[in-house]
Amino acid sequence: MGDGFSVLILWGIIGACLGSFANVAALRTLAGEDWVKQPSACFHCGKRLGFFDNLPIFGFLRHSGRSGCCGQVLPRRYLYVELAMAGLVLLAWQQLDSMFFAVFIPFILLMVVIFLTDMDAFIIPDWASLGGAALGFALALLGAPGMPLWADAALGGIAGFLLIYIINAAYKLWRGHDGMGFGDVKLMAMLGIWLGPISLLPILFAASFSGAFVGIMAILAARGKNADTAPAQLPFGCFLTPAALLWLFFAPQLLSAAQ
Image 1 (cartoon, one colour):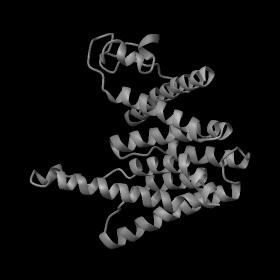
Image 2: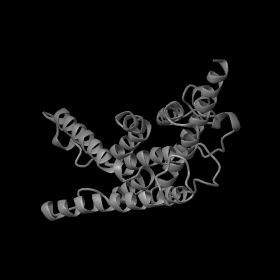
Image 3: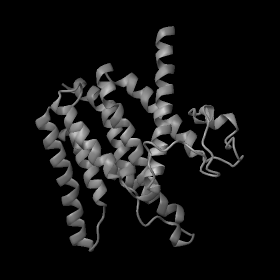
């Protein structure tokens, strides 16, 4: 029991570190900055951060949510994303086979980055979606554990791309404007490669249902107030990515039980 608990603590720490990386990658991508080589610095005063300030969760709590260099309040988003990523990694460790788990850590990380950039700016960066698609197909070609066969991965990528592309084209003919961005098309292709064609319709249905629910709740909340407070558009990637993670964590067990 002690060894198992130690392993969970270790993966929780690794997950928090990945959450810190996801935050940096998302924010710097949107700012057009280098997220690979550029050292971490305080975004208030620009001072380079020390080792302890860079530690996930601890670095935030160390100065009660303020920067240690200039005392400015830090966005709580940093803490929340690090905690969420730690939770996702722990859930993946519990739900997935160990080899399967190792292969899909990059996928989970990319889902979080895509969620953050789409939430902040309605942008799904190509390095995350197309790069993720290329990585997934390479892993499928290599026969990595948990990945679809390369033919299924290719079919999933094509089907995912066409599914959203055709839906958006039909919507544009009907309403005269796009209903979804092209980033969602590329994201769905990536999901088809990693999770296989069987995952596409359930993921799309779950994302559409949850998106419609959130949209209706937002409209009802805005009723009686200024109409401008109701969102004109929702970031669909923020619904596709959680649906994809739910499929990853729970669908294999459900499908095995149904057989």
